Length: 221
Ligand code: DC
Image 1 (cartoon, rainbow, N blue to C red):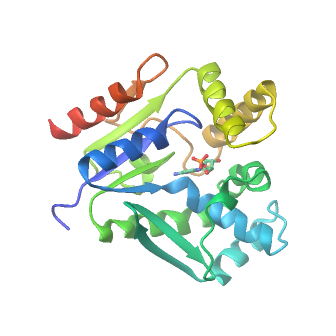
Image 2: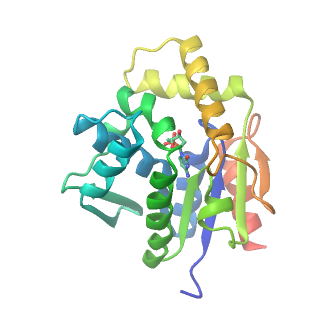
């Protein structure tokens, strides 16, 4: 475990974390972890069990009642819930609209954080999220906070959704992003903040390659 490196990449929605984290992981041969997928997984499981996601007790019960399994596939961690591996399902609108509230439930955060920490057993990781540098791996020397102007982030998310075939309006994407930013940064448990010692990268006018290079250079220093 001594040689295991954990690179923490935090930041708001649509700041480019996923693309950057995947690029860094690929170049370094590390495993990529999308921590938001676990919060989405808890939400998806609750929804498919017909649970009201505004009822924390019911969400917690459906989370603990399920059988979770983690493994590595194509350089990234994946999980199954009761034997099913949700991927596309995690991106669907009903999950997207409820996940920020589910991620604000302290017991859900505890469950997810413990599972994320145990993923270091797979080896070196690049993990993206909101609290990786502050809560999941606070002792990691490799912490980054990726940001971009809200308008730029909303445009990136809008293009992503449209190219995925979703029928969205740009102003609605902007509103939904603002709403999620607010919930994520004002919730009581582990709000999105810059971790002490994190390198802040504003990617508004940087290319993807520049951002990846900035992260790798800082890790290699
Ligand atoms: O990154 P994402 O959009 O898939 O995240 C989904 C939700 O989970 C979002 O509301 C933020 C939350 N989240 C979190 O609270 N902590 C993390 N480490 C990752 C995501």
